[in-house]
Image (cartoon, rainbow, N blue to C red; front, side, top):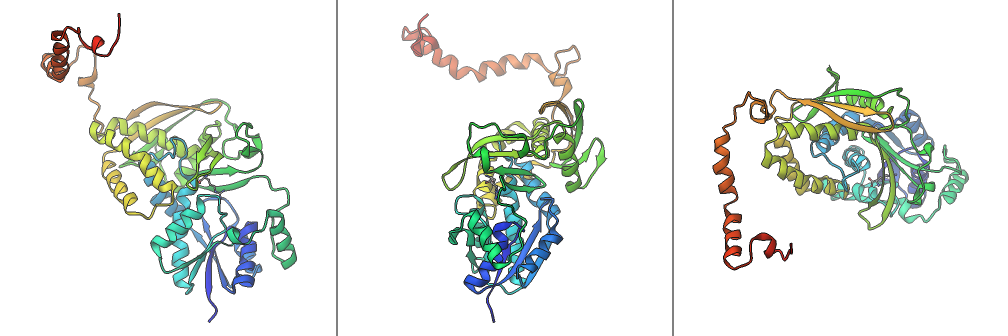
Length: 409
Ligand code: ARG
């Protein structure tokens, strides 16, 4: 029996050439798997192209809901922003794709999994570490990393072997897109000083005439409604993305540290993801107990780092997710966001039926449930250590904290 490989197929130049190459060079039968993560491509056409290129099977899987529910929502609950900025768009879709590659490998009796990543990026790490975590017995093949062809060479290869491609010689950007956002690389933006030209953007084009206000409803840390209308998670993310993207909100322009040690200039568009994180962080401010909130803030960057690094399927990511999940029980309520023309956004209100905000405790007005006399003893004991320390400074002839710190009047 001919050995089989399952290829993560996008329909682009590299994976199309890979279908041919895996057969011609390595003698594999190729099963092409195209996963719909909300990239907005015509995947039926992509499937046809895979078959036209010689794949023995071509499978299209709609994983949008799975990506949203099992990956994007946990990322939102972790307020996950890698290096404080990047909402992990590509890093979230790879583990979903891996899950399906492994399942298809089992279904079709394949012994290997292949992907079209280069050796310079994070996505190879995510594909391979993920695959090894779920199926350590499968081989991994990365044609683009070994075939030594430039983009020009790959186009020539396709022409030579009758591989149908839609790529043109002057493709400028490398785009990776899903429902959580859009990543743009290559071309002029490889110069970190260069302003990204308008043509890199697709989801943050400013078309709204004035400011936009939107109310996002959460139940136990899951976004469930927009402006009071209940929506399934895929529709909610899609509608919110279009709505707030139309104010120009959602652009990110950073120099990012890849796992492989390369700094790279990245441009992203993630209107819904960024709006949801803002709203969710704010609702946590209202609903999480102080120590839980502070501990969670410490763990969030670690969660984002692990997922960025391709360690979705790892015991630490799972353990941190268990902590985060347990904090979300009462993250229920609504947050009002206001988007101003030009891409600005602020939270302008929040409310929760289970919030910990107590008007009677917080108010400076007369209606007051707070016992002011309790504060005197509390503050004295809170500061007792400092008072004792300061008294010693005085006894030693120093004269308090300023003297101890070497400060002079
Ligand atoms: N730097 C981002 C990340 O590592 C974006 C990667 C985009 N991937 C791509 N194949 N163009 O998550």
